[in-house]
Image (cartoon, rainbow, N blue to C red; front, side):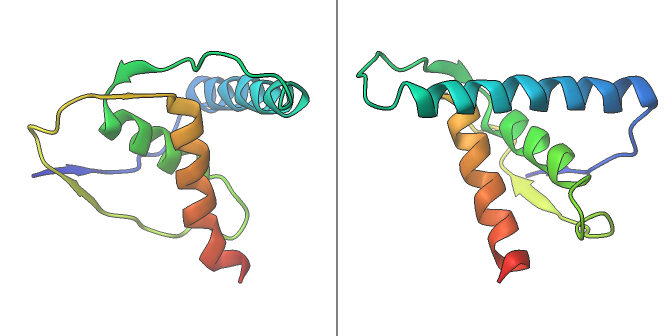
Amino acid sequence: MKTLHVVQHTSAEYLGLIEGEAFRAKKITGDLLDFSRVSPSEKAWTSFGLIVERTLSILKHHPGLENVEVETRLPADLPDVHVEDDAILQALVSLLEGPRAA
């Protein structure tokens, strides 16, 4: 099993996270505006572990979660998944933020 750890980011990495989140928010907004139209999905092969790492990097900076430690255990031989990675990332963020908001 592989253990993923959340690490402290440098200013450049932090700005990269902000930029990535801004583009993801733009895409979510665009998706909401296009909700009534049916369009092909933008699925791609990707590592689920990378999606989890991105999710934890994003959540590390959310208010109330700065000092939360998360340990993940993903098998080293976990195959890539064919998904829309931003949709999975948003689902994970919602799942992990939910208990904090309750």
